[in-house]
Amino acid sequence: MKKELSTGFNERQYMNSGEFEVFFYKDIHLDHVIDHSHPYYEIYFFLNGDVTYEVDGNEYRLQYGDYLLIPPGVKHHPVFHSQRETYQRFVLWISKPYYESMCSWSEEFAYSFHYVQEKKQYRFRTDFISFQNIQGQLLDLLEELHGKKAFHKLHAELQVHSFLLHLNRITYDMLNAVPKTYENALYLNVCDYINNHLESNLSLDHLASFFYSSKYHISHVFKDNMGISIHQYIVKKRLNASKNGILSGIPLKELCHQYGFSDYTSFYRAFKKEFGLSPKEFREQKGLPEGY
Image (cartoon, rainbow, N blue to C red; front, side, top):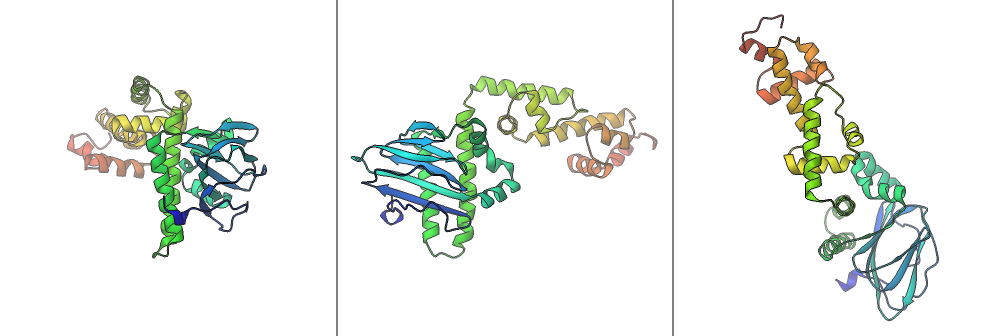
């Protein structure tokens, strides 16, 4: 790690920046930090030391590769058992307005902290390779923030966005470590359900509720197996079913509503994009009369 990027502990518990701040701390004689909370999100990555961390009344004996997710208003502090080892950690602060702006763009940014706030479980444990990757990304972010390169502020913002999504993926993988046979069964059952309910509600919320799984989990299991998103798969299946409906004589405007399209225009565009001709052109190509 680059010496110039590390600092001793700063007792400041407020943000100078309105968006995010990141620190790499290395302390030799630190023996006490008061219990505290703050109005921003904190992501803490433990590297070294003889420390138990208390968060919201929960005690976590830390080891290399642990990270803590601490929402605004949650009290926390380290308890030191020995000063023989250097206390090293990364800390990333993200302001509440900035975090909420990311989540308004995509709810996937909220995955890890949503879990923490619901379950009150604040400590997560990574493997060596994953944590090495985390360290590399945080050091890159520190270098960008301390450097004077062109567009460094925008680049740092993109790094924070990318890092939070990367951390969410690590959290998700830990929480959903299930046998491959289970994921295959879930994928096949979702396909079967879609194929038999093309005229019904197939929203991701409905599928998650029906299969007692998270939307994130179903989406990723499906895409890993099929190679396309659930939405793309449903549209393809519905369009193929609508072709059969045209051949059966079902009126076009009735078909578009039957298979979940909001109006004929969206049905027309999707049909033409998939098959290279419009629903009417397909009907005419098959020699069917105008009234069909």
